[in-house]
Amino acid sequence: MNVQDHSLQVKAGEESRLDKFLAEVLPSHSRSRLQSLVKAGAVRVNGEVVSKTSHLVTEGDVVLVNIPAPVPARLEAENIPLDIIYEDENLVIINKPAGMVVHPAPGHDTGTLVHAVLGGLDDLEGIGGELRPGIVHRLDKDTSGLIVVAKNETAHRWLQDQFRTRQVEKVYLALVDGKPPTPVGRIEAAIARDPSHRKKMAIVSDSRGRQAVTEYKVVKEFAAHSLIEAHPFTGRTHQIRLHLAFINCPIVGDRIYGKKNPTIELHRHFLHAQQLSIVLPGESEKRTFSAPLPDELVAVLSQLS
Image (cartoon, rainbow, N blue to C red):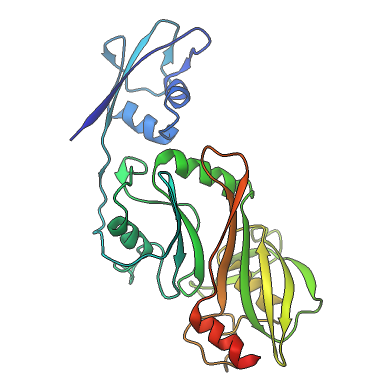
């Protein structure tokens, strides 16, 4: 296994805990990753192994860090075609098809987006010491559209920061049953796990759930349906699906929150992550990426027109 050796000298003003010092001088590695290396005995200070992250380093100390190359992922790479919208050395933006699960999980141990990325990209640098893609947000299995995947630790943290601070702008297209109470609106309703259904989420009181906010506008009205543009400001599980059902406009084809008797036959739900605006690593201005509506959803709209 290849090992990267980093020899670092503590300068004036850099005196601090060992883990903090390492995080500041080796920004391409996460603090948790560096802490694990210290505990594993991979860091020496002035020639002596130091295994305590709280060890104080002072001016003139020489710190040697041995960073092993990323180990292979415990998942098998699979040759699954990817619809890549954008790619550079740091990340890839993929147009995920409906029916594909993002992460391996019980019942979905093959054919996921992670398996596809492992098989389709040859320049992954790894996350957390493992040669795997960095997934920073998710799409439900039957939701199509844009998803961002980091190739390295630096990009992973860069993207995580943007999602955590709600700087990422996302636009979804949804076809719903009925018409919203207003053409433009804002839904604020807390979300939590449904206590009686493990796979469902539920609208709950603010004290019981996590804040969730979605803004929407009606793009087109049909006789019994509405095409809606949804802008989620938070990223709760099933948020858009649940919020639209909450205003009595469930998404067409939604088998969990939709109508028991479907008004349109569709093998998936009509929800598509159409647009994503983010700042790429090393840049200062947002870029906007788009994914076209899948053919099966275009066909539904054609039938209604």
